[in-house]
Length: 219
Image (cartoon, rainbow, N blue to C red; front, side, top):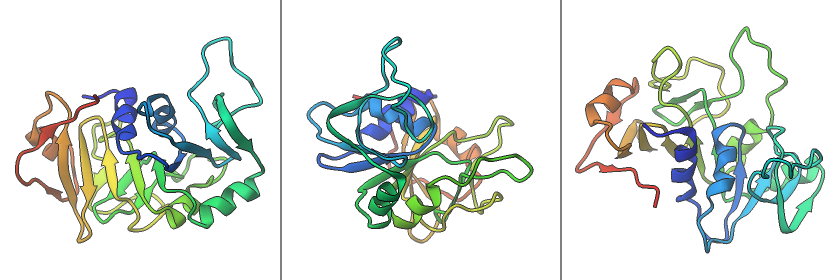
């Protein structure tokens, strides 16, 4: 099974030259460390930054430079810092080409729940609702199952929704999957050593398996 870092590394392969990319909290923030060489990408952080770089080395952190998850980050030459009103103006005007989000649950028709678990305190909904309503393309980086071993890829989300029919692709520690327009998860790739049968057992929603399923590669 893939680690969180390997999930991020696999998602980085989906980024194209010239993209403006928003990285959500959690696994998505790790993608900044794996941008392919030769690819010119501008990473946007919703708290007001264009031109986010990799995480800093220990001892080189600047407490004034943070991402949306309050982690210290670096900036690249030509980066720009601005207020959240400008940042969300970019998001709502669909200036972001790709959004990468974490999720608690994703349904087989592309609904996402990633902001609240009833009964648990949250600081706020954050920017996820604006992102899922405005983004041209959304990839989810998530664990396939929860700590109890229960699938997080469901026929229908059980948690409060962040967005409806908005997720295009999912990368987990087990697999890469597309969300089909008619509903269902189409298996595209599997993690090395993970069987299709195990992925089927770990997926509560409708799983579509067609043709040869290749192993996920990071190179």
